[in-house]
Amino acid sequence: MATGFRFFLPYAAVDAMLLISKGPLEVEKIFTRWYGAEHKNNYGAMVSFVGTVREENGIEALSFDLYRPVLQAWFDEWQKRLGEKGAYLAMAHSEGDVPAHKSSFMCAIFSPKRRVALEMLDAFVEDFKANAPIWKYDVVEGKRLYAADRSTPMAGSGLLAGDEK
Amino acid sequence: MATGFRFFLPYAAVDAMLLISKGPLEVEKIFTRWYGAEHKNNYGAMVSFVGTVREENGIEALSFDLYRPVLQAWFDEWQKRLGEKGAYLAMAHSEGDVPAHKSSFMCAIFSPKRRVALEMLDAFVEDFKANAPIWKYDVVEGKRLYAADRSTPMAGSGLLAGDEK
Amino acid sequence: MIKVEFLGPIGKEPVEIDAKTLAEVAAALKRDPELEKWLETAAVAVNDTMVDSLEVTLKDGDRVSLLPPVCGG
Amino acid sequence: MIKVEFLGPIGKEPVEIDAKTLAEVAAALKRDPELEKWLETAAVAVNDTMVDSLEVTLKDGDRVSLLPPVCGG
Image (tube, rainbow over the protein chains, first blue to last red):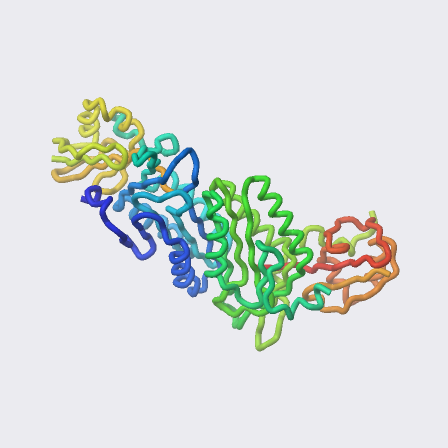
């Protein structure tokens, strides 16, 4: 069912701190909400990342599919890992089309200490690229073309191609 | 002269991308301006850091002195270093008092590529802590007490205590 | 029966397979030539939990998902 | 004359010193006991450019700044 409806939900928060948005993110509003909600909690450092669609190679837009149940589990695991360091995580991602110069991904980490925030932002964004169940397509002349060459096999990939050991 | 007037300027941009603000930073407004101004320039990644005054040890506020000419030169050097990597830097800092739960420092790095942005944010913030000419005071019962134990001697410190070699 | 779903760009309708382990699911899917390239690069979830062994046992109604290479952001 | 200014928490009014090198400035400042701890930890700028050698030569009107340990953010 999750795969069936994933193109049609107009706007939905999967979790208070994992936001899935149809189309481009409202970056300023999301940042303001995160800053307001979390920065009052005596966190000294807030680091954030915003990913914006670049205009290149004649691409009109990027488009995204995502698989919510595994995305949520992956996010919850990170939230737990950060919680053990006294830090806190927020993330937003687009579903569907995002035109050039609009943003499709943002995340923030809140921490009492800057070292944790800086190190974890790097680690989180890299793991996001490698293991968040999100698929990217170039939109060219109205068609969605899977961005295979920029995609990364997830941890454990190829399992079904192997022989039983 | 720079030291003479540094407590009295109400609000002044030293440079378009180095903002010095009397009292707490208007974080949401600054973020929105940076995002809007730079994120249209086909930068795929924007990373940012926000530093907020923590409530601890009975401190009412932190207070900051800064020395603009050397701060500007240090900032310009970083802007140049980032420019060589195709990236761009913005920074804002408070002068004078900043109460608990308000923010005194923010910076952002814009880059076509996420690796440059993530690595440079870490390097910039650490060098900021070590070499930006800014002095911090705890405000306790209305008095400014130099935060000597949290301060770092700048590169080249102790020069005048040494003997001629 | 085990339901197998193909996420993202694989673009294939779910299939039902009679299998008691993930190894049996793998064997069945290998018979579909259009899946060959995807099996080599897809990761696998059982009931939305990522797995890393073909020895996982399955029961009637379990759901196996194939997750091809990702690129969020 | 060389003007020497003491930034941030040093909290001392600027002084004027007759000196032709930074080494001579250092020698003059060492005579002030209240500066002893600051000389050990302060970095130095000449006309707002950071320097790392006592051999820097100075001319009339130059400005030497002492920058004590910093803590922005």
